[in-house]
View (cartoon, rainbow, N blue to C red):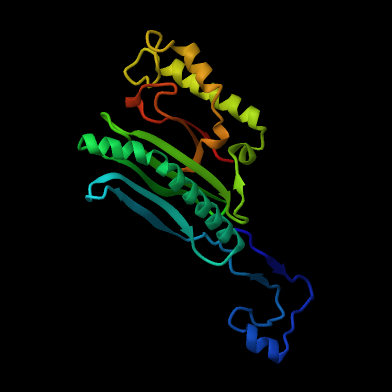
Length: 261
């Protein structure tokens, strides 16, 4: 933390008027005529923005009351009246509306499925603020879209804001590099992870005998925009790719990370 220091040396003296003394007496030293060092209270860290989670839920039902799709969308609501808080809230209000519209895109298909089976569709999103350090606010939403079958389709949606302004920022902005350079660096980290884990039980990637191996993995990675697939947690920028992009479903979201400057 920064401290300001006022020093008096030699014959320089500090004098205080009665009015000033009556106000400042609790925190100012007496005028003794001796050299004095006055320390102000330490500056506090930037006040962190508060958040509350809200959830939109809706069940779509047939005329006889059978559910054919359930949707649930959790999102953060920034507290306070600051311009940054209002900007973040506008962002998620618009995003929620777009998500709901997209979730309604297969209602007829879901209804037909429910009429011929006990299966109903579902799309559920949960949310976490993974970083709120006074400089950046990172929000990670985890979704699972189920349309029948053995399991749903998981997905992540991440966004990073400048805590002071509420503006969106990219990992390239944070690291001070171009988007192209950022993507190149992240791909290199994935390939390093591939080389390190290949042939071990911990390898999360497609291997040589499945989906083409390293060359196929590199090709798939080169088409990913990692500036939109990144969140901050534990002081690191964490990049992810969806299941099936470079590894099997069981591997989940494969991640690499870079320490945040």
